[in-house]
Length: 442
Ligand SMILES: [Zn+2]
Image 1 (tube, rainbow, N blue to C red):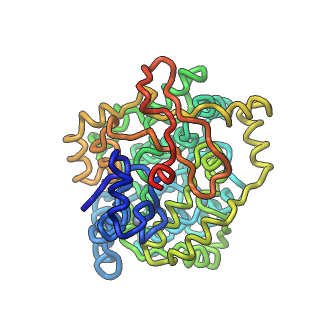
Image 2 (image 1 turned 90 degrees about the vertical axis):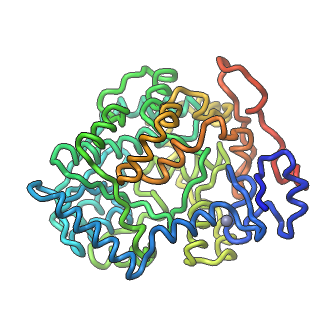
């Protein structure tokens, strides 16, 4: 028997279960994770999804063979071109390891691509330099206009949405395509690993170019000139005309992040920067301050749950680690306020402002849903990832339950302001803050 935590009958259903029913018996996800459901063993749908992906992307000898077959195809596709593959570099562990893998282990001709949002940490820059230098890999860089990026950055704070890094994440994707398109490269490697990072639950975050433009038009001056944008027409051109595919090599490997960090340090003088995505100062700020304090989102839930599923840590260890305080360097908060141009008083009102959600703003989401059959073909042919197809095309916006999206999560510092639809939208009460599941189920 399955049940959805968002159903009205949930508390009665929960009581029927042998298990606690609000907490997964395998990972550390609980009823506050969007769209979670539990089966009769008390195992959540995200753990089951992991099992499916594990079957689809085997590791070991089988994974190695699949990886090698893909690499052979990349070499064929690269004939007559200066490079076989584009790899985005951030100075982080995943991208640095991919450079090593592609060039040293598979003999691919690599073009590294980097989007500089001018917030890079010193360690990140040094990591990029030492790994690229050692491997003799060319670098394609796009630097955004500092003032323009800061205005866009500020708009996202003003909009009170959680996706502060969305303009950068999309720009990264666009820069990879720009590099590939310029040199006729047919493959882009992505460093995502569902085994170490997990799959973030649909509903928390969203991204597309139209969303970025809507936010910046409504809360800023709307001018976007140097930030690379993944506009629908450009993206379709890169996929359909240039035939540029995405590939995630780490899916086929027994990827142990801790061991990889040690390896990179020994082989390349690479330095650890103290936490996931901490190579970038805005990401550090968003993950360790903004999301937990304002939205009650602690991304460690996702990462630690993934590590449990992959058998890399125990549930008990994860519970201990999630209880630890998130490290935060107050200097970064001062820097962020300064760069986004907020006074202390303005910043306080940003942190207290009612929460907003992407469904309150114009996006491509509806078009993605309408174009579902087309994107299915693109997914089948390796142009878009399965997670894009499922989250953006299959999952319908009106099925996203925004009601309980930002419930307090363990480790969050305080109660958050209620999520609120913009004044121009009719308020049907669906988005108002409800009592947390825990209380209603008790
Ligand atoms: Zn689970």
